Image (cartoon, rainbow, N blue to C red; front, top):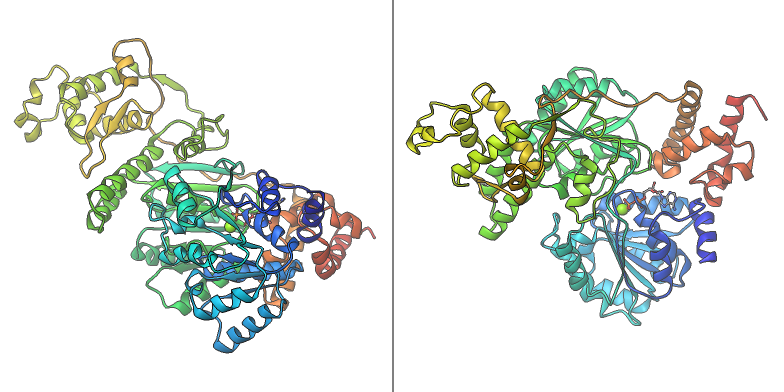
Length: 596
Ligand code: ADP
Ligand code: MG
């Protein structure tokens, strides 16, 4: 492992491993298969890139998205690790050339699109090579139960049988519930893999749910308050993307758009401008996805409700991949639930699948209503045992007082029980309100003792409160298009008077942007270093962050290195990159500090 740490420093410029990396790297070097489940930004790439650089021969990396491949290959070559890619973007001449150079042993790492694995030519090639390691990135794509199933991923398991001796197989994903994890192991035929799960919490992200805001206005204000930051705004339909992009551009914000209805050309153009920091804001559907390996995305706003927490965490997780603070805001409106239900009904899933989809949607809606820590809610959803509250999210920073709402809760629970746990939120709220609705009368609910017991409250607020009680686990909603309320064990304790219920005021505050301003001097130097990076990037035609990440530039601002040795102690500066770029940045720092 001594050697691995040395190489980590030399090639990648890092002094130590992040959580989980050491075990994964060590296991691969020992010849064990591995399954690494680590959140976005945890540093999965290093786990296979480092062993690949150290092991004799050429390692293969299977990765689902073409744009992502190119960035990674660029970054590896920048770090002095010769790498190539095989995918559909190559012309046949480039392809011939790449195959020839692979066969000649010119590369340490070759990225391959899954669709390319089963060509006869590729089978012949792999038999001529020494392949110590096959890494599968975004391995959840191999599972039908994941959120991004790609049938061509199944080719990986088959391919492995053709390579002698069998390489080590290393699979990585950010999102895996237990079902998906088991599916990865069996579909890829992992051989007693060493499993490393680092937990899902992202300590640099803060989560927020904003309810009842004018969404467009909120977004405009938000973007204006952080003009220098890059951000992604996810909307669920193409129409919303188009509308929002036009709205922002009218306001003078240069925003790009991305959705499946655009031409390939426009999409890759749009993505490139964003990657190169030419446009700061990208408005997109979830088609703008795994390819986005941009490390300095500072915020992700969801304009509409995602269909489940897996997708939400994956998308929101694109903020702050460089470890610097990132903000994830979900704009919630109750109508969005109807849109998602409509999509489930329109979908082709069988009844079991639909039931699962409704259940996932319920969990997503609960997330929007919970007053508990949002990060903890997500982490628990993925099966991690409960953690301390994060202290950063909308719930943790909510300063409104806690109110004892035991009495209201008891009224609601008892009404649900009296309605025989067969009705949904709206109907229950109507009964509590004492509504003259025809249906209420038709079922005879106006005869119940709980009819009108909350007549002083607005029906909307009663529904809101019921939602909170669902989110906090007192009530349950069935998994169907028209979910039905029932009481849980936790509510029974409240009805019996042994537990009390506390809640913050129902009115949701409007969350402004919470970012603090850094020291002005730091900020000025940071801007200058960014400019140096931008110039170099333009000259070399690579995305700026493949030269240095924002986090690396920030570390330079803090340390203000004066010479090579000091520069090499900056997080993210390895020898190779120092040789290529170090002097440019040292010069700028010297001129800024007036020292030499
Ligand atoms: P993932 O694929 O898990 O989402 P990446 O491999 O893209 O994450 O890495 C996320 C970020 O963490 C990158 O900016 C990477 O350079 C950085 N990183 C990786 N390993 C280390 C390390 N040992 N120390 C510091 N930063 C690291
Ligand atoms: Mg990754």
